Length: 431
Image (tube, rainbow, N blue to C red):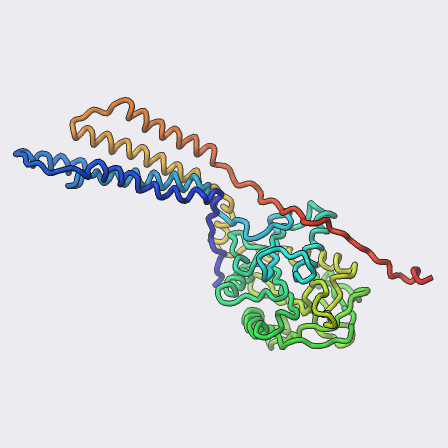
């Protein structure tokens, strides 16, 4: 059974939520008005009690239905003032505001953006930003999120990239697995953080349960080159291509299960030993792509050899371009009536229906107040009637003003200008 993405209600102005406490004002004012009431004996008290029951007034003199309607009216207006929207809000930091139908979630361990080489997502971020400047009309939307917020949106991301060290557990693992089975693509980048104990045991168990592929640690490679296969359909497959420049010194040791190996597509291998470096596995309506390399800038302690220098070579940019284009292509339409319905109404403003309910409650309050005065034999003065009708008109104006959809969530401005360095290593430079 495919579990749809959870439905979220986003509040544009959550600071107004404390106004919900004002819902107790009608009850407080009614109690304040009758706090000094004293029972007075009277011969015709039975007639008074009968009139009180007709007006739904308690023995203490509190008009309960009218008070409840007024409390509900305040609650509805306070909720509408927070500008709620049906759909997903910003799960983290928006890096690129591109095509929302091809959204990518870049999952990292830390909650704040790190611009140093120690950030495992820095190389991918810089590559996608360069692609966005080159082709702004075709670049996908990229959000940097944490494990706790990944895959929580109503409109599930097309691609979820788990950077090195971002290993889900418990509810997070179940939620990401459900997102993959529902049609998303998961790219798991393994590196020194992910294959170190105890994370290695955790990621191996989760990956084996999800895709039938396990991780047995890492293997040392002697600066082997990378051989890429055409990561497309069989009709467009071409001969393997050796990436010029990048080498691999260490990679995660991927172990195929008996059922996963026939269905696996190996995109890249090491040139000498033939170790699989990029593997794609179908999972229900989605797919899992495992990278035996961290796809990060070389970093670490002095004297510690980096796993690969792929991210520092010019070949990395077209590699990420092909990777993003391939993995953000739709596999199948979203499955499940609930998921399709939630996605269709994503971003729908809820203030207007809430204020419509508020208008109905205001009219109901008017009817109850008029009935109470009529039973009591009192007149309904023009000021009271005008005030209540003015409240209904005010709610209609609020519904017209607050009925729009939320503005597009913009991308964060870059902290520093990106610099691209191209080094010519052709034989002509040696002459």
